[in-house]
Image (cartoon, rainbow, N blue to C red):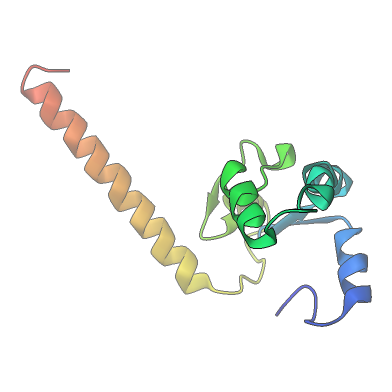
Length: 126
């Protein structure tokens, strides 16, 4: 279920100003302040320019994502904050199968990386 129903500006304002901390969403006043700081220069930068090109340049320059200090160090797999899920294992995940698939993909990637490191060490390179 969506946090904010489409086309409901009042629900959006309520949600963006609320405090959320769950395995699938972390949002608080600090995140909102960082988003406002990131958007503030953008609010006026498009005037007098090709808006589509300006949006593309701006998004590319920011890496296409806003980075929030509140999320630094959080382990995220399949859009789930694993440390918060570990604290609340009964939390109803929206798509548990996706999380399992993503965890398996990460495990396989790490196993492949470890296997590569071991083969380098066995050849005398590590």
